[in-house]
Length: 112
Length: 115
Image (tube, rainbow over all chains, first blue to last red; front, top):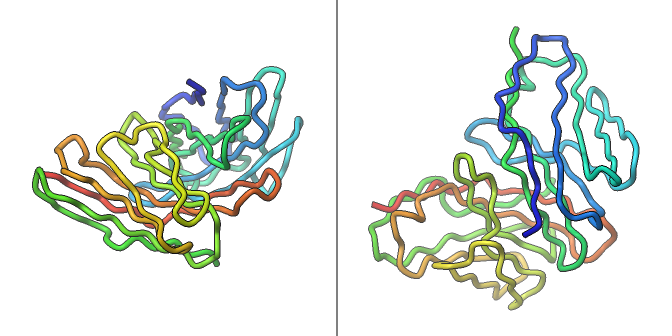
């Protein structure tokens, strides 16, 4: 069974701090990695995608991928109360069709 | 903007009923998915479809079936609803076999309660 693991949290950070969210996955051949944000009672929405090793930055968000360690992370700089949500890591495993497997999510709380 | 629309936001059904959940997308996406989301278990894939009339089982297909007669529409069917199927159901769509980008766009979700 191919798996995606996340710490469920909650992760609490003060406003203005850096929030670091982590995700590990079991399939070494995985190629595509995604971070989704889900507000309470809402659907997930894509905030970052990353396909190659290293960092990818988009505004206050940075995704980091290390395929050798099978590890992907999301950094949120200058965290705001509006960033409080559950963050889902998703991985497209090697082979098969275009479907992704989601982790259970990490709940982030940004304290004003 | 991509729009994925689910037919109901909230639904209450009785045990043993046949339940239909409908999903429509307007971006000509090849792939469509049905997930259920439960606290502590995350999003789990029930079924997906990569083309009209084509379907593949996901991780938890038992007790469910699907139908895709038109590209834009993907239906989830609970053959005989049980209380264990009380959950949030999310439909999603994505582009087909084009590169590595498999970004999924989600509908607003259907909160199904089986009593």
